[in-house]
Image (tube, rainbow, N blue to C red; front, side, top):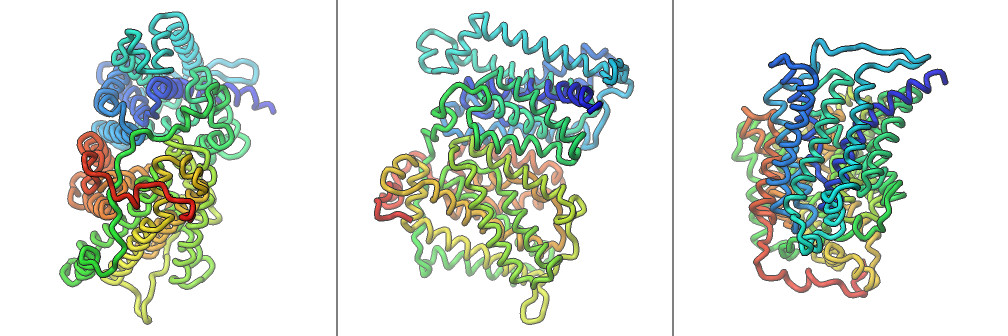
Length: 628
């Protein structure tokens, strides 16, 4: 127990930086009711600009700190004007995607300008420290505590002692009513957004000084911590964000010292899930669930589901053309690209079931994809089970996991589903990294056996035809499901799950079945990938990978079966077509997400909002007799 004071000091110091980021998340959520996934970009911008000022100009730390904060503030202005303002009255999914996309672009820009490696904030950064009994406090820990306290005090005075603070609270309650009272809502929102980004920049500079390290992906991790802290304390409560940040920092410190530092980052993911499931309003949340769990009020219209008729040329002709690809492509590399395109289409098709037809923003599909891969790899390498039974078992295991995965999401709606699935995906990813005995951790699983057909191992064309069969079967299964009573229940749930419950159909059961099917399809793609590439590691299944999957669905068209297949194929091929820019793949994904949402939110093959309503059979709420 002699380490306890030191652990508390370290935890409270780091928790203070989490609190600053969480305050920014809570401010934006309170005013606009959106989750700003670009908040991590301000953290990155603040740290890198401070580093550049210190290294290029030789200025002191105060100038670097102010420069980083100002640059982060400017990044907030860009995100609000480009990614948020045009979409204020659009579905909750739209600004979530655009802020996420713009955040990816900014993070990748830092990678391009400064390089991928970890760098010191300043080579000569002071390491001075003071001893208080058994506790050591460094200069930058003291500075961090002082800045955090000063920032929180200043923010409290602004929000509770000024007319601007009263206006912020009024807009948070009812933006339209505030405008009728003469409040300049546009000006207030941009100031709030910039202030939130500036707090993220302050946290970035302080975090970089604490560890004397700066790297391009630091914003992504800080974003996760900020969301976890905000959820823990209460999304709309600034005081809750502070409490949540401090608690998260202390819990992480205790985990590192008394359990294992390897599980430190898993705490944030786990807290997101636990708090959302058990206490959605957070520790200090005062509102009911009407704002947290409100449905999407302006969902995009769904395209009509293609009728499930196997003899239609529109179905048979594309299948026939796709089957002939290996006979046309003699180049092994191009055939490999075509195989990856088909596999990506399978994943996009599975995600479209949840995000497109059910209207739930899932950021957890990397977990399903990874579970399918690891399940088949472990069964075939550790237990000696033949490849084909291993792959089928992996599909079943992933489907069961998908149903269990859906259970914590039952009470959540809107962007809280996105945060919950992102948290669950993060927990699974950390298990893949740290459960060495099962997954071999970062070393990965090697020498995964290749499937055989009539005694001969599959090769290039054989793998292509195998994943094409998976894609065709999955697409036909999805079309048949959506053209059934259960499919009509799914589409009705997207518009109003309370009305669905009113006609005798339990939305929770519908969600569990839907997640199970979606996970099983993604698991099939994962199992295929494991045996195709013969090596897997956690790097292929990070939560950020789910963003790429969502980009595929958005590009093709939410709620469109052909759109999902098209979007998956295009974004899988894009890095190969732009090999000279392969390391900027996430920036390309981000740009595509932003541009598609801004200029064609329904996707390339999605339904135009001005089009006629979809056929009544698929659009209307199902009758009680249609219970799935």
